[in-house]
Length: 168
Image (cartoon, rainbow, N blue to C red; front, side, top):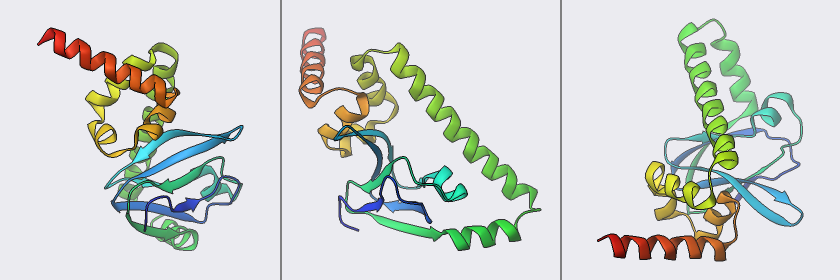
């Protein structure tokens, strides 16, 4: 799929789960005409609007490719069939529970970071914990993810470059 392909639009009901084989996706919301990115997905990760997919309610966010991507798609009917077949498979249920737990933990950490950390600290955390985001994602999406403008992100990056030059 080419970059900037919308896989799920905010307000639509999700009927698919996406698994990234190659490329990068982002999940974002529209906030008064501005798009705010809240998560990136890379190779080996899956994404869907879980509440929309499971409960057939409108998605509260959009999922979009930001690089040319190879995506595996699981349709809702196939998911339902698999869930019915594996309903008593405790190994599968444990794996699903672990995936849900990891996603919950991710969101709690992100939420607390927005409360506790400055934009510069959030950028430094991103550099340390998820360098692939800084290497592969356009700056305006990173700025949106950090909750700042592209200009502010540029200032943070320049400040960090100057600090690194002085400390070398």
